[in-house]
Image 1 (cartoon, one colour):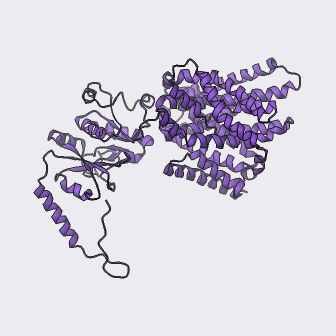
Image 2 (image 1 turned 30 degrees about the horizontal axis):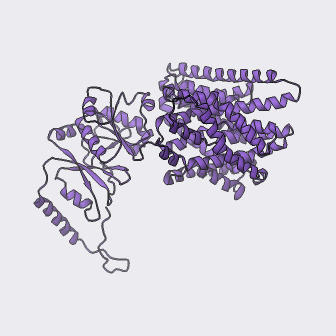
Image 3 (image 1 turned 135 degrees about the horizontal axis):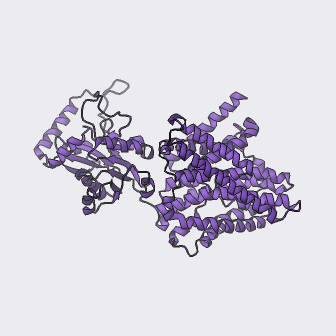
Length: 633
């Protein structure tokens, strides 16, 4: 049994992370691929059955995983975003939840469910799910305000949906014994308030203890995760599903208490969230039974259409009446509402409870919840980009470049990139240094790039790469190390460092970004070359004019900096790597202002051709001379 459980855990990891990798390579929604992988591994191919493998431990495993995901989502909600999204999020919570609950109940009853089951399931359906919304927003590159509204709504409404389901269940359970609504609902609301207080108290305890050294650095992550699980379980002892409220409040509270220690664990918590989302989706999809789908009739197909095209749009548009939000953003939010883990997990729990109360329709909830998840993820996941583009709220589709440091060199680079259509922004904390940027008409960000407020004040989604090029090389290293988890270690760049590579005074390579230029120019080198009048040049490659020709035209001391693909992708030349240029690429180089004479270029070209002709002929596998191969550049 232990070996079987270990094998299933390994398969779940391979399928979940494999689906994420395929989604990254293809651009497909990762959630869709994870659902397909889990469904194939479980009910279709019968490779494994999580319920058989893990038994009664499966439900608490999934519940704790969902709690950690909601906590991680809460940590990403900073009240600095409230100025952009606050009014709309409040309306979607205060008005949208009851409106969606009512409309969903009516539609489910018309689809054939008895009223108690319809009301309970409609309460769960008010959730949208951060496990689905946040990855989709990351892939779609939507403008900041609608993205913030959808993110806040998904995290706030998850515990709200659980609370609605608890209220409905307790009402139908206790009303049969003569209890009235006034005797049932207030205690449940009081339990929700107590759960929220418990989450806030836990956040205050963490915020007090971590900065004062009460918890050593190596124990901060374990302590934090343990406290989250303890708070979730403790709140659930107060009332079922109240733990989701506790962990959400705890996450949001910590995010707004300026606990500096939490910044160092951001990469870890993001990795944990990816693993949990992947694992839970695979487990839930593989737990589905084909017999659960036999309850689904044509009327439920009509309900799914109503959910997509009537209930969600009506809920959002009615909730935002009188709002200052532009209509195009309202329409986008009205369309996007994918459901995820919380819907399936809570539906499975209450399906069993409703069956115990004698409601046969409760068994339908399992299959119907999966049908809702699949329908909404497919419909919204594959159309989010299209709808955002049609409504004009999509960010730039070309990968951008974020430059840290306003110097003459970075301004010249930014001008060159802007001419090629690459979104570019120069960030600097000095308003005086930014004056030249403003005079050049370039986009800029005034503020300390390392301040935690930057991730809320500066939308990083449009940028693919970062170049740190201030005159302080240690600061550049710090910037690259800080943003490596955002852009990727291979997409943060800085200038080279002076001195021998074995010099103990040099900064460790593990902290530094990739060194720009094959020659590894340092700060002092670049300042000297800028004073000498070096300039940027751009060269468009073609089938007839290749990379070797471009190098021949480059002055002797010049260096290639980067290439820009036709789709805007940026590839930098560094001290360690050289991208492979292709036809239609644009090469950006940095070289002395004096042009090379045509005679010198022709001489170098002739020498290169002569060297090629002197190479021994390549032979084919049978030993005969082979034709010269065409160089791929």
